[in-house]
Image 1 (cartoon, helix red, strand yellow):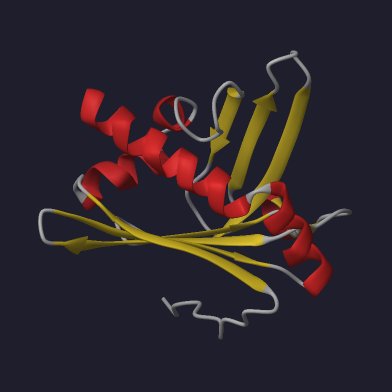
Image 2 (image 1 turned 120 degrees about the vertical axis):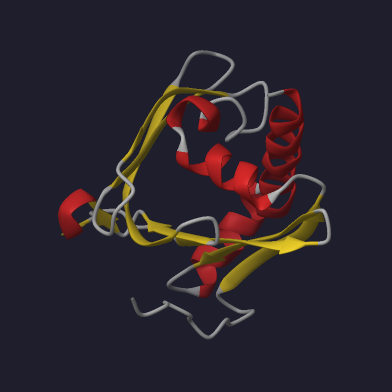
Length: 159
């Protein structure tokens, strides 16, 4: 399989990278098991009401986010690349089965690698233009993705 490895552009892309003190195998399970993902994937007090994952290129990556007030926000896309225990690439630019999306926002690359007793974790958000990147940053990309990473680590430790 050919690894998708885009050239990162700081004008278009956002990156969160940290080393966390849980093993890569458990980070992978947290990302790829619907029952696990719904416990940590959005900053609290938001929640995930539903998760559907089909771990294959073109397969569905879908979450239904719920606000504290009960509003629901569906997010549907598809996986582009799956490298077990190492890398997930998904996008909302395409729907399941490679169908084009009417309102694409970003493509995510989640990379995990062993580092000491823990995991080097890198999440990258690729945007089509500077405005999309700016909006994502203003929405709180670094804080939000950092918060959910902390929630994921806490969830793994409690498993």
